[in-house]
Image (tube, rainbow, N blue to C red; front, side, top):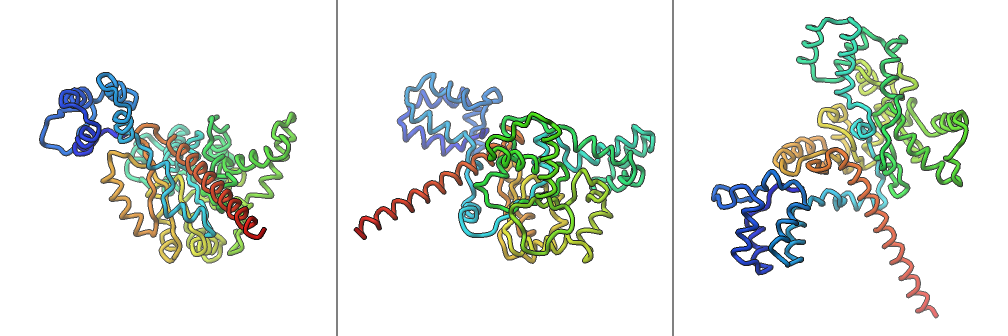
Length: 400
C-alpha cells in the first residue's frame, strides 16, 4: 500500500467527483499528517491508517460516492508490480529463448538461509565449537561482508571433506521445507512458463516442485503410501532431471534442472568458498564458464531471488551478451529513489531490474507476483487460442 498521495492527484479527484469543500477538508484531516502544510507536494497518511480498509472507512463515513471511493483506493493500492513488464511479456509470449536463474531469495521463503545468513551461521558454529574465540568471531563478522570469504574461513576449520563439515551443511539444507499454501517453486515450474531452469541453490526445493507437478499428472500417483517407494522414485527423478556437473556447452535441455553450484547430497563438490568460485567461474578447465557463456549469448535470462552482491561474478559473461536480461528484485514503494540508484548499477551489468514491492506483504509478495504472472500468461494464451479458432471459423465460412 502506498503511504502518500500527491496533492494534485487528490485535488483532481475532489474536482472530478464533485466532492464538497467541507467533505474534502474532513477527508484530509482524518487521513493525512499536516494536510495544510505548504512544504510538500504530497499528503502523507497518518500512522494509524495502515490499510486500504481504513482508508475506505474514512471515505465512506461522509461520502456516498462509490466511484470516488474506488478511485482513491486504486491510487493507494500497489498493483503495478503484479503485471508483467511489457518487454518481458513479449519474451514470455514470443519465440525467444528464456531462462530463469534462481537464487537463495526464493528458497528463503521455504525456510532456507540466504548466503549471508549461511555464512553468519557458519562463523557462529565455529564459535560454538570453540574453534575460534569470541573476539575472533566478532572481528570476522564485523570486517568481512562477503559470504564466500566467510565460508572459506569456515572450510579451513571445518572442511566439507570431513563428516563434521558435511553435517553442518546437511543439517541446514536437508531440513523439511516450510509448508506454505503457495510454494514459489510451484509457479516457477509451471508448464505455462517455457523457460530453461538454472539455480545456484544446493537445496532440492526446485526439483521437488517439478517432481510433485509431474507426479500429479500421472493419475494421482503422488499420494504414495510407501515412503521408501516415494524416496526411490524421487532419487530416480533427481538422477534423470538434475544436471549438477559436466554442464553442456550448448544444446541445453528444457526438461533438465541445471544446479550450477552443485547439490546438497554431493556437498564436497558444491560451490561455496572463494576457491570454489575461482576454480569454477574463471577456469577454462571446468564446464561452468562455457555453460554460462552459451546461456547468456543465446537466452534472455531472468534473475529471481538474487541481491546486488551476488551478480558481479557474472559480469564478464553478461556484458558480452546481446540478449535482454532482467532481475526481479525486492524494493520499497516509498523508496523509489533508491531503486533508481540500483537501476543504474544493474544497467551497467546489462540487466533491467523489475521491482516487486514488499512494503505491505514482505517477501511473500514474490509469490503473489509469480502467481499473477502465471495467470496473465494463461489469459493471454487462451485469448490467442480463441482468436485463432475464431479466425479459422471465419475462413471455413468463406471457403464454404
